[in-house]
Amino acid sequence: MYKARLYRGLIAALAVGAVAAAIPSRAQQPATGQASPAPPSAQPGAGQAPPSWAQGRPETPDAANLAPVAPPPIATPVDRLPLAKLKLTKGFNLEVYAAGLTNARSLRVDDKGNIYVSTRLLDRVYAITDNNGKKQVKTIATGLNSPNGIALHNGTLYIAEINKISKIDNIAGVLDNPPKPTVIYDDLPSDAPHGWKFLTVGPDNKLYFNIGAPCNICMPDDRHAQIRRINLDGSGAEVVARGIRQIVGMDWHPLMKVLYFTENQRDWLSEDQPNDKLNRLLHPGQDNFGFPYCDGGDIPDPQFGWGHSCNDFTKPIAQLGPHSAPLGMRFYTGKMFPKEYQNAIFIARHGSWNKSKKIGGDVVVALLNPDGTVKSIEPFITGFIQDNNYVGRPVDMEWLKDGSMLLSDDYNGAVYHITYGPPRQVSMGH
Image (cartoon, rainbow, N blue to C red; front, side, top):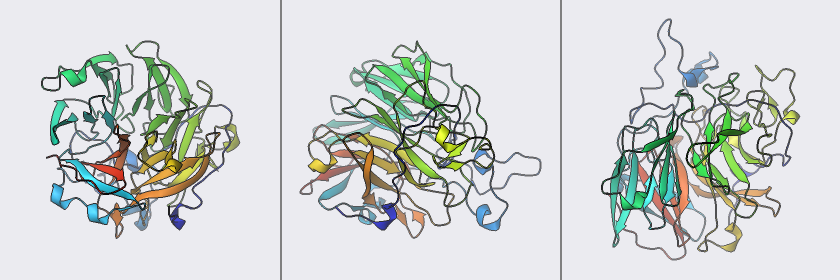
């Protein structure tokens, strides 16, 4: 396996720290109810508040040219997907699994092989079905409020919107005529900035989800910048971690049953600071990850850090690059990939927007020590950035029963299939 210099120095301090309260920034385009948000480069008029992503932006010409990257308004046709530009670790192959899923985000796979795909800029959730090798994309829910987070448990599909969590029971059995999702929990803020959620079911059979900071950098109230968990019926809500700016990827260590998650840090501190993070939750109900007092795990925030030390907060187990926007992450437990990847973490870095020279736009793999700390971080898929422009943006990954990987690309509205060994022929969806 090769190593690129770009990935050296990604590993941060390994410590696990103490307690307090807070949360950091953003490295993704803002949510809207449309497939294509309003041009982010547009300047607010006189008397208008700046958009949330511009909060704290320096008044310099270089900064004025930086703004979130809007995806195309419709999915990219299959024959224009950037497969030839993507480079994988030797021995791996990448093909199109399905296309035509505008703004494809989080992925989940049920026991029957159906794939569920969320959106963030749209109002819908898709399903990809496979009938004797012929794939079909269906829209199974609409009218939702940025439904980025989805989870499957015992045949039930859970959907996390900005301001509520719903479910559809026996989803595989009702794909041809799905009912309207049933709301199970709605005690949530309605803030659009960092309001989109990631959803996972823990070993304790509870739903875990994030509530992001409603800002680039600010002092959050008691309802923001945290991880909550609820019972599967929506009861028993409790906060299990604080001081978290925004999460768009979580997963559980397959042996230790500990929650790991990616975290996007604040913007406009500088082009090269702070680093986004990989965290783990060892002390539920106690861990505080530093927002807004500490950025990247190692830099006191210039606005809120006075009187606080970064050592007062839970340290990340790895730094993932400045503004690289790490999103989906999954532990590998399959059998197809080489043994060195067993129980390693694959991480999709969506890519920066507030850097003159973009970074991220790739998938990396964090190889772990036996104690769950990070040993090294290696490149796995590169090439989503070409000539400082995006040709795609990876978001989330999931595993098929044979141990192969599915990878979503919200920029192109596609799901890719990654295998190891001789290339395979995979039929494409429409």
